[in-house]
Amino acid sequence: MIDGYTKTLGLIGDPVEHTLSPLIHNTLSQKFGHNLIYVPFHVQKELIENAIKGAYSLNILGLNITYPYKTQVMNYLVDIDDIAKQIGSVNTLVRFKNGYKGYNTDMPGLYRALLSENIKVEGSDIIILGAGGAARSATFMCAFYKANKVYLLNRTLEKAEKIANEVNNFFRRNCIFPLKISDHSKLPNKKFFVIQATSVGLFPDVDNVVIDDETFYEKIHTALDLIYKPKETKFLRLVKQHGGKTLNGLKMLLYQGIIAYELWNEVSVSDEIANSVLDELNKS
Ligand code: NAP
Image 1 (cartoon, helix red, strand yellow):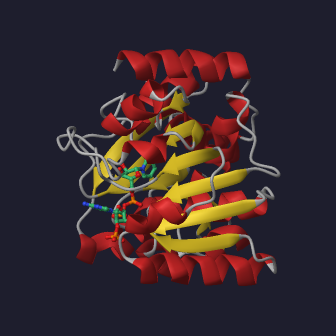
Image 2 (cartoon, protein in one colour):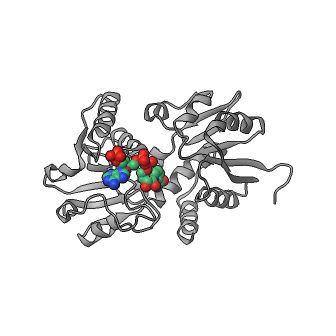
Image 3 (spheres, rainbow, N blue to C red):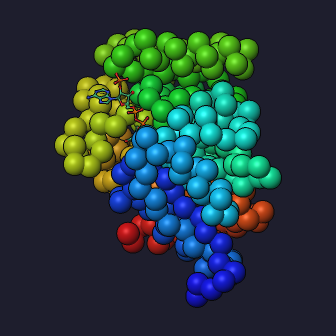
């Protein structure tokens, strides 16, 4: 029931029509019995500053920010969490006294998704495919949670080199090693956990895969594809065919939302509630 006490939360992006975030947050508010509503806001680039100021004036409790505004929005906040500042990407705004504070919940959301599947980051050797925004959060996550060696493979080597330099400097540890994706055969001969963070294979491009050389898949014990549409990408099918464990991007999406919900409402979401929201996402 929406009444005079209902608080509003929302998502700002362009486009927003495909989003699963309302399903996550409205299911969470039902589970907690909170009087909240979460709605999508389709905002055009030139209106983003107005949108943030207007949202604050309208007493909107918090916002998620999605493509293409995760960096641009940082100009219109009263404060930014340290790690979000370093990553250069904000996906969650929390209401404070004179405006919103920005957080990045993609990075801890990814880590919680891995924890929930017993996939270890600490001390592990990891390959990340891609050097876009999602790969950048994944690289920070690996360094923050003390992975052993992380090979960052991208089609455009310079982008992987830039992220590797920034992350190695920030954590004062030489743990990120950039490589051109076509040079993947130069990787050490051992088994890795792989994070697929390119957009190759995303619906409707479902018949494509970023590496099709089968020998690469022999080096994978576990793989996460950040894509969740389709639920099983060609990449994950190849990993499975070579005996690896697989996970799609739905749990990362779920946990970035859960961490935002926890920040807005000062609650802690149990595994039981998280799993019931995941059931809803899997049905969608
Ligand atoms: P992005 O910034 O546009 O980066 C795209 C990446 O894909 C770049 O590394 C790009 O390489 C690579 N790429 C694109 N086409 C390629 C091709 N034909 N061959 C080789 N590499 C190619 O995108 P993003 O925001 O990082 O998102 C990446 C993926 O993660 C998307 O599918 C997105 O849906 C998913 N994602 C999921 C979640 C989640 O919650 N599960 C969150 C965020 C993103 P170049 O640098 O060489 O162009």
